[in-house]
Length: 263
Ligand code: MLT
Image 1: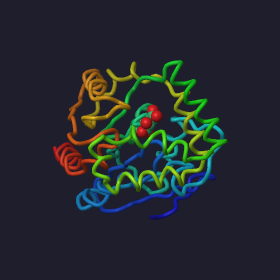
Image 2 (image 1 turned 90 degrees about the horizontal axis):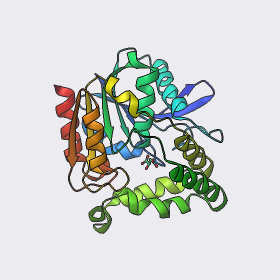
Image 3 (image 1 turned 30 degrees about the vertical axis):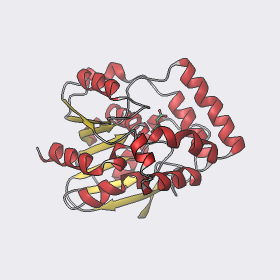
Image 4 (image 1 turned 45 degrees about the vertical axis):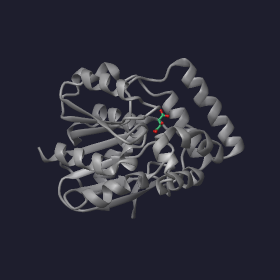
């Protein structure tokens, strides 16, 4: 791992392999380690870059709210700091997908392909927004353990939880280590994010969409609708997986990513 300075921030970044850049953006409230099975396997063919977004993992801390636009700009600044000028393949899971839409909007010349896992384009409705604000307040008061308790059962498929996969405990530890201020800032940022669904007909770069068959946060039928609205998309349901499909079924996910990028 290395630290990369972008403005006043220090991002913690995995940068492994060589060749075409595959930039992987983690979900909430996680860090780069959710992509470990992709980094280990795909770095034999690609240069895989997986940062901890600002405030997450061991990257620097954040302001009270962090917008998806800000996170997308951080990625463009990261590519600049790493001297990468050619367009990249950008993969994002859930919140990482919200950041990916903004990256497409703000830095189109930097983008060659999109890989979207377990995400959506619509903004939050009123009720979800209120829940996020209330959760942010509680996490600041009660600590990150509250979120680990709330989210772990929803992040994984029941079968992953029942087999006691090591990924479940590792993910719990990542959430427990995430600073409550970072969690609150990202919750505010997600609550205020733009509805990007009107952009979809204009996103004409090749886009791979993957969704865990048992995802309860962004169900497969929602992602299928998303795929239908994108002009150049390919959708695949990942079996034996919930919301964290890349971590729960890396064999299937890596095979789809390889197939997509090798075209
Ligand atoms: C994520 O996995 O990034 C979150 O579930 C996204 C969200 O809360 O909307």
